[in-house]
Length: 211
Length: 211
Length: 211
Image (cartoon, rainbow over all chains, first blue to last red; front, side):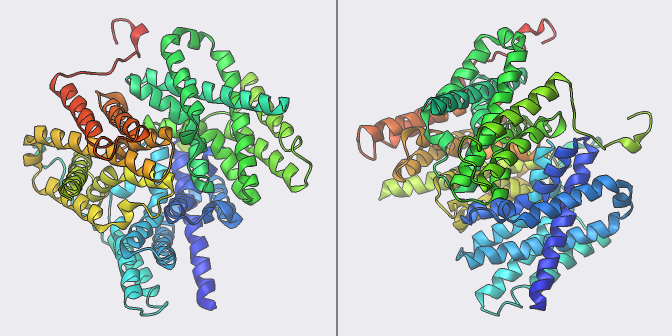
């Protein structure tokens, strides 16, 4: 029971920080009040909504459960009301974002496995739960998806989902299907931030001095 | 029966003007004939298609009912053939766009409620029916979604869906679940156009004189 | 049986070249390793995934069948490892892209018809199977969808789907519902490339000399 409560808390904390990230991006682009709330909601709940569409889990939980919309709206209002504060707290926000992302990756994978999908579907949908909201946010803003461009982010989500699928495959029980994935995903993301690790790039190599 | 006929007429008029808005945007970006028709179709039917996906109402009506495609194509061809005319008629087009948007918001909410979804799902999907087509149009054109950036548009849709959900909750009957929402949504949108009302913005406030 | 094997081969070849096109676009934009693989996968499988969502064929085959992900990843790695080679082979890549696109159009239409959808749904989803991956690729990169802007591409897909639907309507049998559509779609695309045919455009006509 306390584990369940911790999980719920982390989930809602994830929604909140994802909403902040969406709202901050919307505010930078000078969107109006509605645009900011909408972008906060899409960033926080969009990945889960697409996952539920692909799973046939209708209606998507992000649309049907009022708490998601409420907390996303709260995150948007907090960003509007305390924008300077949000910017100064950049580090804790990144930390919670990493926690939320790890949560989303693990929870998305578990939901897919719980509905009887195979390992590949669970991995892909777990990853999309974690990174899909940010991708939709960037699509709405007409810019290249940051997640695809920068840093160890999706790769951390991949690591988390793999550990969940592994534990599920060998029937190691619920705790093993949760905590190693959660910690590894969060840990890899945190370390990559701490030490500025990046995934390799290959573009513009042939470009010469101007690249 | 006459009410039903009026409703159908408004629905198809909404499709037509949404198609014009999509086709005009495509034409400005120099898309080819196919691109113009595709953008007209997506703008007119995209919101409803995503709504139907989220409701599990398959196949989506926008794909299965030939009249939607036919009228969207007609709107695209009208825009191509009479572009100057469409631009000079900017005001009636905005008027019909407001009518279509109000129609879509009300009809989307009613469809979700009719399929047994809860109030929050109905509100969110009603709003997305109204604004989703325009958002998809802008995503295809690689630009920030206008709906999120400008004017009282989504807020008017929200007002309309709220009135529908309210009337449904208190069992006030079909007429009350239709007309107040339709009129309030159209009215708010019309007044905001007439008097150039805008939603508040918050971005760039700290930017100083150059912002 | 040999026909079935040929079909499977073409399908996987289509996935491979679509993945190359996605990975090449991602590499040009300087995305990281994960971004390149993700864009390859979305370009190759995105159209089919959305088609399956609209058909209610869950989970989408592109998520559940490991071969799709494997071949898309292979295409991405090939693009990274042999980028100069991919660029020099631009012509065969275009050729295989045309083959893959024709395959996707025909297979998408047949899947929709096989699930009992009407002709219009089958045509629209067949077309989206063929062009949707490229559209999603461009949306992720924040640019106007190339498919809507350029050349005879979607029109070739439309021709292919029409021939499939026609053959299905008159019960001409599986061969007639496959080969004419496949050949016409591929042929029109090939000829349009060979002779630089384009769809008519209408934009900027009133722009004067600077347009």
